[in-house]
Image 1 (cartoon, rainbow, N blue to C red):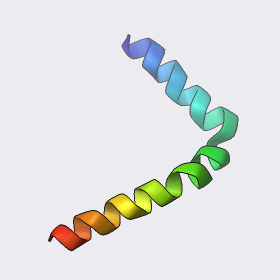
Image 2 (cartoon, rainbow, N blue to C red):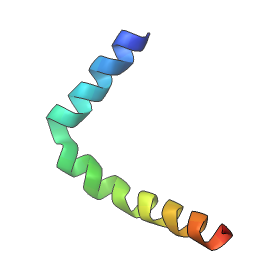
Image 3 (cartoon, helix red, strand yellow):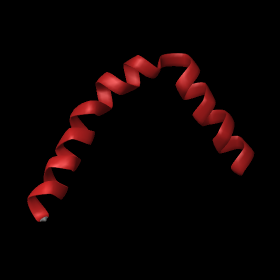
Length: 39
């Protein structure tokens, strides 16, 4: 299971890292903003 996840993760980084980054960036930013607002 752990090895499978590792390969999945490495495939993510190798394959379309920039694509995933641009797709997930708004979610990361909003998540950070929510955490900052809670403090």
